[in-house]
Length: 332
Image (cartoon, rainbow, N blue to C red; front, side, top):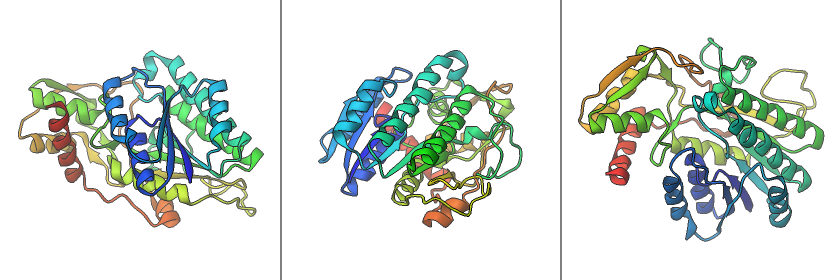
């Protein structure tokens, strides 16, 4: 099977490529290698993939309509895993146009490629951030997600709407996955896992927002990848009896699932686990809530389990230990 993975030099994308190659798939990975964070880290991720049989990499911007159309027409992908995006909630406050180009136009070029070339299944990354001002826990795919608190979240919700319209109009089987705070080795350096680890390791103050009164549904990278590959194999079918409920299904071949650990941890407990793994104490700088943040995330994953028989299994302490081990090897 020939599969396109967008964002192949990214954190989740590179891991998904590894897994698909291990399964015997032929994988074409694309990435624009943007400098939003370390290009060196992205190239190192790619270096681990380059010599693997069946892998091809193209440096390509998702927003390049002509190049994307040519790629789809030339390669005739059977399935697509669309993970490429401009990430980061806080960065969206400073550079909103980057999110329009990458997350909106970029997703549209992928959808067009799938439409024009009859792709069997498109799996795309959404985000827990779409739940916005929701206060009911755990977050369910049946909840209303019409009140985002960041532009990043708004673009991810828009991606879901765009995908559904293409699924409805052109019968493209499409599945969206709302990821919850992914962490692990090779993780992004703009995320809390890296920022906290580095600050503690170097004996510098670390910024803890909302005075530490926040909880996150931290989900280990291996669990995310397992969910992605299982969902990729489960091509959604239209439900002719659908009349508006459940929200995560449709009369089109379209589905939405959460992938999270379903065990939110407080930010302060998260920091304590990093302290334990490093053998060092944190210097905490307690700060007010940041614009675009939410206090708590927690995933209802019953739909995912019913669909593919899988729930994330990695305990947070184990995941943190693995990350710190990798951090010391890579940055040390």
